[in-house]
Amino acid sequence: MNTGALDRIRTQLLWDRLLAVVEEQAQTLVRTAFSTTVREAGDISAGVFDTRGRMLAQAVTGTPGHVNAMAASVGFFLNKFPVAELHPEDVLLTNDPWHGTGHLNDFTVVTPVFHGGRPVALFAATSHIADVGGLGFGPDGRQVFEEGLNIPMGYLYRAGKPNEVLLEILRANVRDPRAAEGDLHSLTACNRAGADRLLETLDEFGMDDLDEAGRVIIENSRRAMLAEIAKLPQGCWTHGMRIDGYDEAVDLVCSLTIGDDGIDVDFSGTSPVCGHGINVPLTYTQAYASFGVRCVVGNDVPNNAGSLEVVRVTAPEGSILNAARPAAVSARHAIGQMLPDVVLGCLEQPLGGRVPSEGASCLFGPVFLGGRGLIPGSVVEPFVINAFYAGGSGARPGKDGLDCTAFPSGVRSTPVEITENSAPLIIWKKEYRPGSGGEGEFRGGVGQIMEFAHARGEAFMVSKMFDRIKHPPRGRQGGQSGAPARVYVKDGPELRGMGRETIPAGGRMVLETAGGGGRGNAADRDSQKVAEDIEKGFL
Image: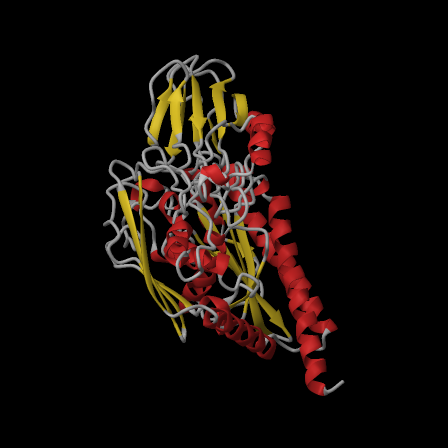
């Protein structure tokens, strides 16, 4: 065996170890988190970066919006805090939407790693904290100033000492200070776990730093991604999607160009900035649009700075996909999570139709609020809980869509028991929604029906960020659209998909999530599959 082969084996072993390190980092975050969005749903990201701020490896646990946006955010940190000026026990923090992952609820923590007295890497992690004060998680804000507490890039720990002033400000401005502060310590702990394992790895491999290994990893990933792109026909393709938006429809317009040096995705022609909080900072747009490409092109190539740099995403400033400060952005996921389906629509022709149909895409994530101080006459402690639920994904090439599955975010639905234990709520129903999957040779995934009520019969509030009510997921190649979503008071009025509303005392809120679009002609569906759908109650 020659030296080159030994070097390749060594690099592969190191790569596998890095993956194990960042996964342990992510699992530490999940195990120690206070917020149910992290602990139960896995709404996080975790990764290791070189000293130039380039992402080398990411944990499997996490969401594309967090991971790919975090990949850019570490560079913003280093612009303000050069790595050479950091102390080994420093911990940096921000929840700034334009320097982090798109809205105030996401806190990103960055920790330098020192070996032999000099910096060798950085670990970063992001988690969604349930409440940040202000209007909180929801689309009703008109500017980011209304949406909650905005913490600019700064120190959470400086030379090992916690920033007590920052923590005191945080505790004074949120509805659940225990969870918010606990989650910041959880983010710190997970980065520390990653750092400890990395230092053990460097010693085991006899390495002083990650510079050369990082260069090889990034360049190998870049070349591998370009090789996958080279298999595709070159050209430009366009696609559009209309979704509900806050108070008027939003058009997402995309052109995708495949060339020698990569793929360019441009959202010119997309609707302008909205007057409410569904606008998207550019980094979040880039995160989900690039993920749409990676779903079907080079999905076996590691997701890091090398593979990401050859998928370039732009959107005109002033469009809803490149909203400048101080636009309201709290519910940026309601738009951003639609982008993979838009990009896949562009790729349908160059890939010969081998892309899935549209799905519900955006999470159905109600924020429930109530108790004294919010509901007149309430006798219970104030509460706020953010739960996640999913609709159906679109039919896939040769397969049905996935039922009640959160694509593209990948987060898990919040268990009934967790919601009922964390807030005075009862979930009276949680079941599949029959007939919601779009018909076709391959059926779209079905959504679900849920009923929520206050355990004491009190009124409560819900902040809604639901789309696909007026514009359901479309099928492809003759497949039918999935059923549109609905939200209403049982035996009462329909509710808006967006915004905060009150569920009256004794009332139940019913959420019906959208089904995914079908694929192909329904007349061609296998009769055995039809019989199975009937047996399962899907039809």
